Length: 217
Image (cartoon, rainbow, N blue to C red; front, side, top):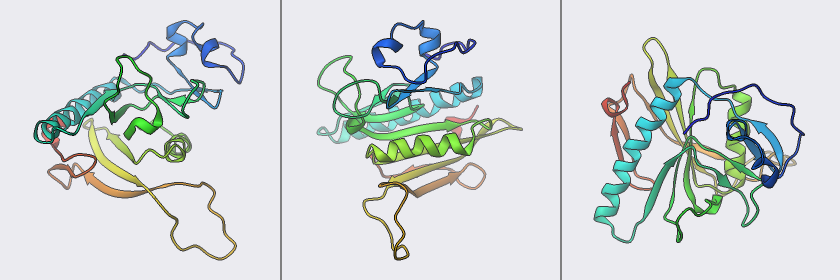
């Protein structure tokens, strides 16, 4: 559940998870820790939450259909859930708008990046390119295989484009002497525009078929 936005207090630049837990929930819920650095999370408008829930419902349906036919598969689909980086510790994490991850062994278990198949963000018109690229780089560096972007439009309010990005397993040909800025990155593997397609059809990490009518406002 999204927390109401309140005035940002004066906090230190770096905090631990244990220190974050001492803050009121309405404050802590607006923060991610990037290797201990305090990152304030921009909360989107009501439409952002609405479309996030619609997409969660659709992905959940697709995951259940796959599990009914492939008993060896076990998927979980969640929204606004912390994903912790590394094998231990909790002071480096982000909170995707939606995610697909493997079923965990214990109830209420922390989700690690190694458990996640898809991390997704619903991008409102107020999101900046800088913020989007920074978070995408975090997901890529953690080795999450798939990253999804959902772009919203207005007049009328709707999902305009969904993009599925796949993690590169090796770099393409680059000029001699040039070193990539990041060790891992995503490339677009699928793109669906609501004005030009009937819906989203994709095969990973499980068969996904979502008509636009299922995501309509």
